[in-house]
Image 1 (spheres, rainbow, N blue to C red):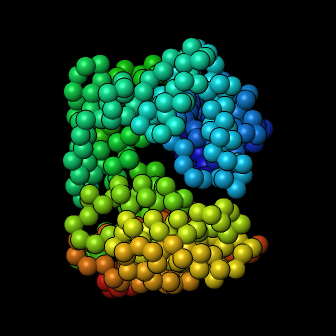
Image 2: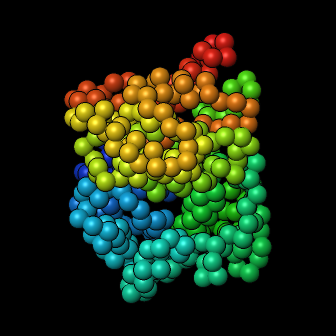
Length: 357
């Protein structure tokens, strides 16, 4: 979790905090004069009913992918946990904003309609009320054409990744659902900045090659990230990735295969090994990576992997460092060692290009 960011900042241990911590944080925000707050509702938090005492005005559904299946029994259990946001937490007079393009989106919309909540759909298809028509990508962001209320509009997003348009418009839908003027909401889209650790610009080499850091730590998220950044890339797409220890083992070869299928070069390294043997974790990731078309290298030390990946960047190339995003530590055994992917990227570029870091 990135904690609280906005009018004030504060660290938090969970994406959706325990009820007492959550209510203390919300009370503090209210005392500071904050009138609007947005938060992420994790499937863990929903399953453990951490949000049940919070009155929401609106709630959004982005997607359902292979994540946390070490906690949830299966996808049905995972869906039921997320559906709790709408069939239990969001009041009947609340508004739900649903990404109708996700395979689970139509079913979530049915959950919403069963409670007679207001529904605002976002997506690219005819069924979307807030509909994306087209995107044009460049090195620093994208132009998005979309439709609202029968009108075609256009907005500049200084964000990397095709999925950012869906996220931005879903966020716009939540703003509209809570009373914001649609025109003012859409006019503000160009001011959006990248969330820390989510497709975050990290460094640029003297030859123009760029480095981004993203939290993608599931097969679906990695595929989404790589496919999203590809249109911004003139040369090769290079990725650094790993897989966490003490987590769903089934996703490890899938992570490797995703990297090898959607990147040109992949460096498999350590993520947060926790109590597991990092060599064995990498071996499972490599088993999938070797089945794809990309050049694949195994480099256990994450700092060395980043350095080697940055060193391989030529003009027009882009490097995506995936898995840890905003995290500032690497969990090895019982220890949390200082480690920041963005910082390591800057250090690597400085060392290779002769700049002070």
